[in-house]
Length: 533
Image 1 (cartoon, one colour):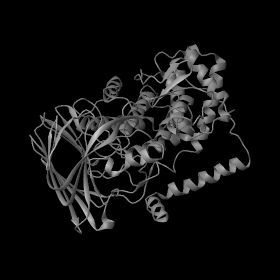
Image 2 (cartoon, rainbow, N blue to C red):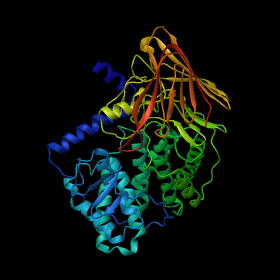
Image 3 (spheres, helix red, strand yellow):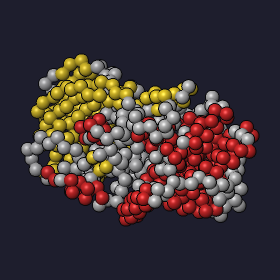
Image 4 (cartoon, rainbow, N blue to C red):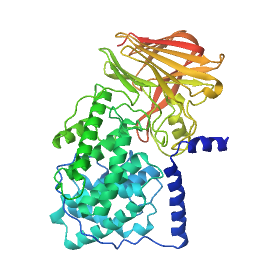
């Protein structure tokens, strides 16, 4: 079983990912064997960059050495590699976004930078490419914003360490992962190239950014990992890079004008997709790995883009596979997409043909959400099919998600009908059982219907899950319907209806109790949601 899981995980990887997985592991072992610490003595003077104002981000440093990441407050112990709060918490600490907080003085920010540099040899993730990438951008922003407040010694010390770290990054870009990590490496090297006016960094950054933007941003403007949260994260970084280059001399580097034009075009496309997917209250749907309180809000991203002089239209949702239906009484987001990019499904869930539903601007049906990246029972559940508004057959996942960020066999989705009233999708997530799952959404003005059908062998035990918002109150459960304070669910072709208690998450590390309707059936189920309140 394990061999099969590994095989179906690895078979989708690109050749370069496999080669670089092996290459980086060998290099890491060699560094351990020769007990060589990275040296941070390479110096190159940085140059002040004239940025337009950046958006204000979340307040994470509370003063008195207390940090608040992912809704967990913890006092800094002096260890940058402290794992007691989980891996994602310590990574957020190492990104050092907090030095850009509005109330952070130049003196306090420099003090934190110096504390980081002083303890770098005891920090096992200091030289990891992703933290270097995000931290490097934050340091360059900070130094440029406070340029005249730093002494020559401070400038030299920071530039020495920063340039040394970028030399490490340039040899360890995450080609073994690709996807958003590799693009972040490219964005950061773009910052390093301009800040240090370094042609070697520029050539590498240009090559990564141009190729990856063309591959990672789909034709309808979506980021190809299909997480609205990561879409917003990448969009912010893209806008930062445009901010970086907007005043730069076209002659600074060969091809600078072309990169700036590409950044502008992709930013416009991503903004258009964002406008097409956000709900009436201007929030992102929490599909795949998505949570509130991490990325900038759509409103702040728009304000930033306008400040940079970027214009955009409205996308017609297409290649991403998401569809957004808006009527006077309700709106729905339909997931008729593939899980994501085949060679990296780290942020994908086994959620084929799920959907979200709002009534009169208030949530009715939600996904369970993302509360953690830590491997374990909760992470497994949140990526599972039963954590979504989808059909589970024989208590199996439609795609074989495992570990914290792995996926072996995965469902392939095919759109059969594409609106404007009827949308239909079919996936083969249960092909090993001789089944295809067919789901039709009928989006009438006063009712929303879901028609589920198992095509192939008959007699399988299936369950349809409907996760209610924590704010929804169930008033009554009858033989063929569930009455809530926001809508009535009517079921045809079912065997039984069960109301269970689950937990959903809108932000990391916060769980809220909510009701879930579980409907068992054999071959077909017709669900009608109506009487919207």
